[in-house]
Length: 407
Image (cartoon, rainbow, N blue to C red; front, top):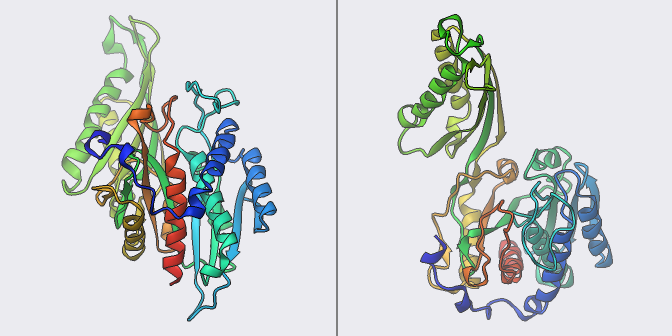
């Protein structure tokens, strides 16, 4: 996918204002400091302290300890409004992943087994840069900006508890935007679209309860491996035959465990899987259909089952008006050919979806891969890294979104 776009060496940064270009070294420094101290969901104490210290030094009002480690900064523009002064939120996630980093770089993770392998350190640096710039240029906009530093996007999800804690209230947020650095797109591109951008995320754990016995005397047993095999195959018929072909969906069994040796029929078999879809109307359907299939196959083999099903994140659905705002701004900043990717979608999930269920908004992808610098490893890879040129571009896009939203 990356190779089909222009070379990152042709990136023109003239549309990034001088004040933000001069901030680029600081953005890189902040990102690398955060990268060295990665923390898992709801454990981002060092990260939150780093953010709070910066905000305090810049004189930006903020609240800490929201949903354990979350932070909300509030910046009020001083330009006289011509009408009701709205509130725009900017969201950045700040947690890392349980991955051992394999990059050989000076800013490599110092926390064993934990790594920023999805760009959240960059998201936090971009949000900090945006906060700094807006605080220094409050005279340029009439309105209030809330910058939400969210914990635990990767797991178990920090957006919902932050919303429940009132981050969209006092003052009430009118719209929200957020970005994801995206190594599936090269530097110098932006993926933005209205409607579904990312998929709903659901998961299931199932234990097949059979009857173990000797591998040479199967008629005395209920073979849990055989039952599980039938289930794995049958689950693939859901997307193939029960979902409208126009709707994209995925059912994946990612783990299957049973048995201990070659001549023993396993008493139990366990499987774990994930479900993804874009259409909100499919909520609840997969749970029902998966259980129907498991129950039917188990009954036909005289087995029993135990199913745990969990709906984690709804799909990320962008508001058409806010998506157009982001697209128009991105076109001003990204001037490379094919810089805007309007149909960029992924079956990956994001709990930004909970914010978008509450207020209209837009979540978009900012291309960050640069194969020429060996910076194109996929997200969640132990050698994930990105071209830090994207940091300043992200700040510029956010700042222009603020200015255009309030105008």
